[in-house]
Length: 383
Image (tube, rainbow, N blue to C red; front, side, top):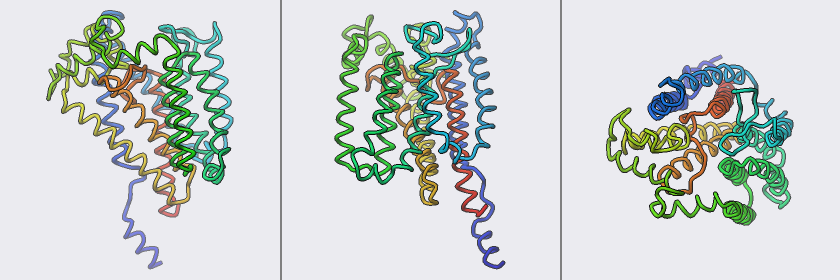
């Protein structure tokens, strides 16, 4: 009894969730809604005759996402491990369905959505989530093989290759890059031999480079970002407008709602190029704050994984590492594209940009991470 009492005094009354993780999520979501509304208000008024159309729609998706997350939060992490393979088969089937005319919905020349009428769901967002779930289970089951044998990392590469082909058929090169990079990162963290990883990484980079130059529009994007001012009204238009937004922002920005670039100069200002509007309206100070919030979020996610690994909950650890890598890669690429450091890609800013499918899947990811953290804390407390 005395030992138990001492332990309770040492532990105190710990929260059943990570307060810094929740703080980062709430701040990013709030800033996302604010900046997405600011970036979309002009185009929304012009296209829909309602300045807050995109805000209302985003709030609907966010409400639905929170409702789904509440259910997902009740699911034990072991169930994700048990059904990961079935979920992978299901998402591959959905990616194939997207490519069938009459079933998949096309927008802006890409077939990425399944749905009925105006309601559509972007399957590639779900694919990112399922890949992390499947790979976490695979790395637990085949950990020794991953560490010692070549076959250990060739098997998931076959699955990744199949998914990449389906994603590129849509086409969605951005999602392909995120899925590939996340998978490689998870395998590296699982203890893959450095020589195997270096060889595999080189092959993947070469393959992605070959894919990038194989399509004229991708090649144009790749070459344009090196000198967008050479063709500022053609292939370099989007990037030059984004760079103008960065230049106008300065240290503290032009003020919330005062962006000029969002007034039909910068395409996709509320989705792919939201960070450019943030740079213009909030300046360097705002950009640093946003990047700091994402850094805090990723650090807390990796901390969850580290704790889970210490407690012997390896599947939960790899889940956290995978989701942390996904968020880190996507927000880094999104910021890199907006600032002209990377070629233009269709990637949104996680938890901030407009997009129903992204919001729903991100809410599920948050719920799974909260569950990982909850189970960690419950085990520490002996529950």
